[in-house]
Length: 278
Image 1 (tube, rainbow, N blue to C red):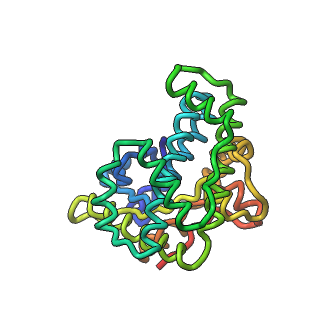
Image 2 (image 1 turned 90 degrees about the vertical axis):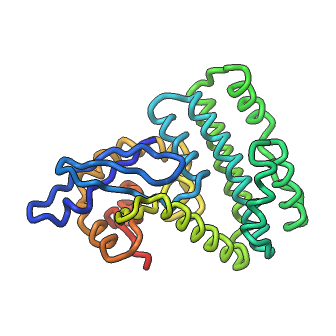
């Protein structure tokens, strides 16, 4: 999956250049590129892995690759289970260093991770965790293990079911205890990714607002996967019309660059903006 960003050094030149450059998302969350003026620019993402994976699936749908979309959605759900498991344990007082030490034992064993999620969920919320619909489990298995090529419609339906599943689980995580744990996890993620930045370089700190953000924070209306994919072409055009000056300025002041969908911003009668988070 690619993101399109500006070189913030060029933005403050006497002759500013607001060209947008493609950067490929990677495991570290740190992407580097060289602009037309040979500046070395580094982008640091603050998104959790499950969010990036889900957006990768949505991008695959937009590009016409439903099989790749299904595998990305399925992996996003698995990593969301990991996120929730760790979040609940941290919210209940487990030290992150101890948690990571224990997690190493199951880090390559997906069935064990699923079991950890289900029993952590049961212990914390006193109810059985929700499950994906049986037809979605069959589709995921057929695509992953049997080489099935799903239709665009099948992939879209599967992705929407994954999105609904994530939303259902997330509703129980909105209290103060879990919200505080989320902030702690985000801070740790930022610290880990910051350590990957080469010495002497200040990264462009970017918080993306992908589809999961809009589903969990509906304004002005709940967003569906189909609507998200449909608006991607509109966003490609809208991004070219709006200035990135304020985004760059905010980042230079020491905040975080928060990029949201132009189409959704326009529905709120506001241009796409960056939110300054000190």
